Length: 343
Ligand code: FA5
Image (cartoon, rainbow, N blue to C red):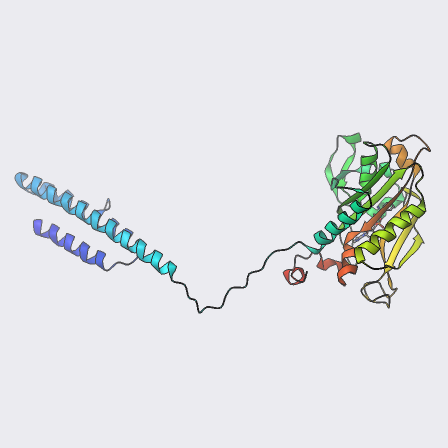
């Protein structure tokens, strides 16, 4: 039996010398030293030996076990150091990998510029909730339930009610939701700008998205006029595009202003000659605006007849389209890196 044990040791050492990876080494350890390993097997046979030989053989098996464990540990260390050397080998002849640096999305870039322009004109720039109550999005803006104008701003409803007036919750359709929110907390004079995301149940096309950004502006004081509104819009557009922008003013209906207007700018995509973006008209609608309706002041709790104010809501995505001559609004939210890397 002594001979047999020594042969096992020699064979194990021979096999260890040929191993070059950790997995094979682990398998070998199990084969010789494991619970069902060769040494354990031979240890069980020890009872077949005459009693006086047993201690000697038992000692030999233990000694071989200790030796093999040591050899296996040394082998493990040498495999580790070999692997880390291999990792350090660097092939300088390989072509470099191209690194792409991230940057701000064009909408965010323009949003930041718009913020600076309105701040320079004395407006305070705020954000507002995207999940809104029916009250602030519609009712407080003179659009009671069943008002036909609500159809234009159909949206996504949330199956839950708010604590505010037990009102239904929805995704806001415009940044006008912030008008009454701000007015009920503050007294005029107000010069407020709100920039943020809005949502609509919309069939998308080249100039319409279901998710869009708007810039709301409103000013409330004792003598605000329509002329102040038009001056503000013109100054804003000229500052953003760094040139004189041609605009066209049309009457427009919004229940929360009286009178209401809509403003188009000359299509920058075709310089007004006509293209698919402006539907060959040479003009693109960028905002709705007007003088704040007395019903809105009433919702905010302002005294009747004391204040006047203007309000406007601009489509930020359309401004971005005009700035960079983008022919389809859907590129902006596509997440397509081939598009994004161009800015
Ligand atoms: C409104 O949202 C009003 N809240 C604007 C307003 C504010 C009027 C204050 C009076 C006083 P309208 O739905 O027209 O109005 O949208 C305003 C602008 O947002 C549009 O002129 C357009 O530039 C942009 N817009 C509207 N719908 C979309 C859409 N689906 N995709 C992209 N831009 C849109």
